[in-house]
Length: 178
Image 1 (tube, rainbow, N blue to C red):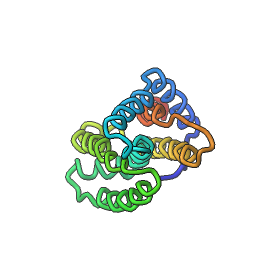
Image 2: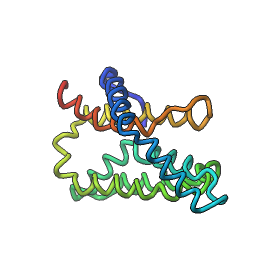
Image 3: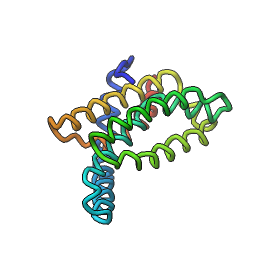
Image 4: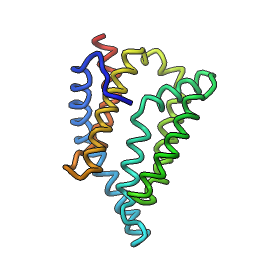
């Protein structure tokens, strides 16, 4: 995952429009409320649940390997990218769980839903996922990962979850303008 892009305006517009949509839908607020509710039910053992869950979910779902691997599997190919991604995510989860707690385990649910949906819909989505669309979507996801890094370092609070619609917006903008 990188922020390599051919069309920086598409990445900027995707983040901006996606953030507005995410803020209007209050994606991060709803997720935090759900995590807080779960933390209160579990008790003191759940300290840091939401931080681990949100960070891991975003890290695992914003990468191009998730998209390309899901398409590869959905179109009948050998899932080599998904297997490599699984290994990378497994090792990453150890480090994230060590610092942010057991909420990382529950990130498997959105990853399953995201990658499963992409795999099942691969035949339908493939015509929209040209090489430029994948590049710009990956760059948009890379910029979101920078936001996650800033959050983890504690410099400031960036509502990265609200930027998620930007991934779809990037693909739409590429289809419209490139």
